[in-house]
Image (cartoon, rainbow, N blue to C red; front, side):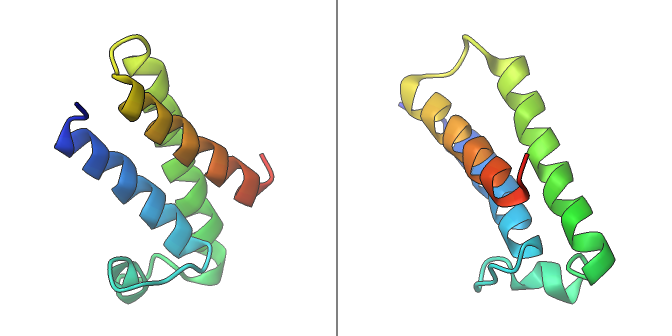
Length: 85
């Protein structure tokens, strides 16, 4: 069974990156208020979230259940595609 805090962390990092890339919703609109979405800074925020998710995948390899691993892999793949990495 996936750990709720792990799922929340992955979802939070992915949502921050998506907000920086222009996908705003009620959960990510605070990023806009905090100035994280200014044009020059938005890509940096998204890339940082991708780096954090990638590091998390490396550090947790072999210690995640299938659902957690799929969630993390999906988030990384989605952001890489959006960023062209």
